[in-house]
Length: 244
Image (cartoon, rainbow, N blue to C red):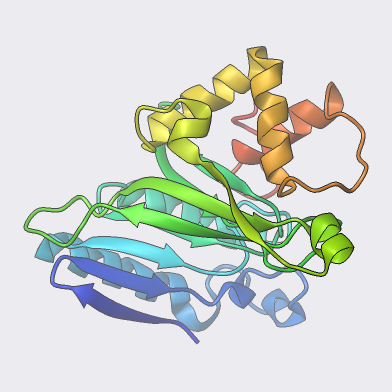
């Protein structure tokens, strides 16, 4: 179902069962607020970690802001993350098969947290297989346990099929590729602002979004660009409040 484990005395890993927010899980019609009391359990885990001075990483499958996550569950999760923003130092999800992220915002519009959505090793939706390695602040007294950088690797399917020789290569390092000072939430928010006005930089992001795929796609401009940027400013599903 869901569980927590201490990786070291200062870091706790929490694995969530995201089927409890899945819009395709019809059992959620009986209780979409907090089925199996998972969110209540999550609050207890985060409260305990806060009192112990621990940091927390959260892993799961469906991102909380994805359209496949129930709005009520997503909104409650969003409030929990903002309450424990100093404790939750990393969120890692999948499901979309794309290389993207979701920014959390407080009531004062201040960016508070990041949910990373890692690329997929499958070629679903015409993407290259990819995987990611996160660099985390290390195991030492008073470590922040924050994500310092991430590096993504990909396998070009066109080349692999042509030469019958699969080769994994580094696609990019987040900090180097986007010129970021750090991977703190405010830096990601500033990057989204830069994407709005710097289209070549945004198009570079789109290439990584689809894992440097050779699959033909139209250039992402206009409505496509706005929808893509909105998706990353929406860590609450079916809520575009922060898109503007």
